[in-house]
Image 1: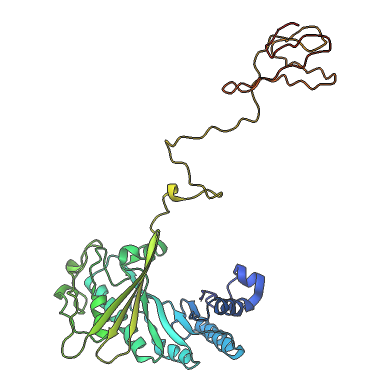
Image 2 (image 1 turned 180 degrees about the vertical axis):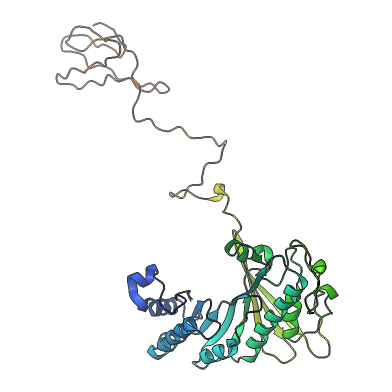
Length: 364
């Protein structure tokens, strides 16, 4: 998938790929991906391309050009990050012009954000917005499915990007279904129990009936098929260390084609630093672990006192001044070894004299 390559005016973003490769980076990426995996589906994906505008025109022209060049491309993703009550009226017409090119279309990151705190009127409008998008996808032949960003409101990206806004998903802060969930299920053709009166789509209530931001609507019972209308749900989970991706496939057994709802959990924190590896692949040392002694490249010399060099009189070592070795045919190492592992280095005897051991200050 090539993701978010356009500015709002339809020009290319000044990305590293664009600077290095020009506009051809999209085609190169798609060809490379198809060569690596001939069975993978290849998509272009962006936001604010759901309606007819300059950005969606740029996406359409790019897709048309790629198809004309024979570049492998299977579909277009429309992220669907909507604002409450602002679903584009041209959504269906926009999707249909892409399917006319022989491409699939999909709503890939659906959410509908609102100003907080949420109240029953806003939640009801959000339900109508979700239902509108669902019905549009059902009406467009070639709409592969709908994926929601995250699972519930606690996982949403919206509050961190738009302060004061949120409540954008199908589930509230307690992961209980909201009116948007009920509206989506109804749009898929399944009958549900009636939602509680405080959450039903109705005219704006009085201010006294507005719940606090932390409150959530009462749970909606799981929909049950009646009268020949129903749905079948299958789940596919791909988990990793810090999150997971779950694809829920909802098949309407009442006659509509299959729809796919997706959920992506993003990691809320960095991995434990103790689980990280150093660059050399070795585990990071935990506090309290025994540290192996490191080799010391430079050893601290002992105080040597008197030294006798072969063929030379005794010399007294001045405090704080290292003794320079006399180099007459032999190189003498006068620096003492490290204390915890002494090494014996005998001094070579002079001609005609008895052997002198390593001990300091001995005489022949």
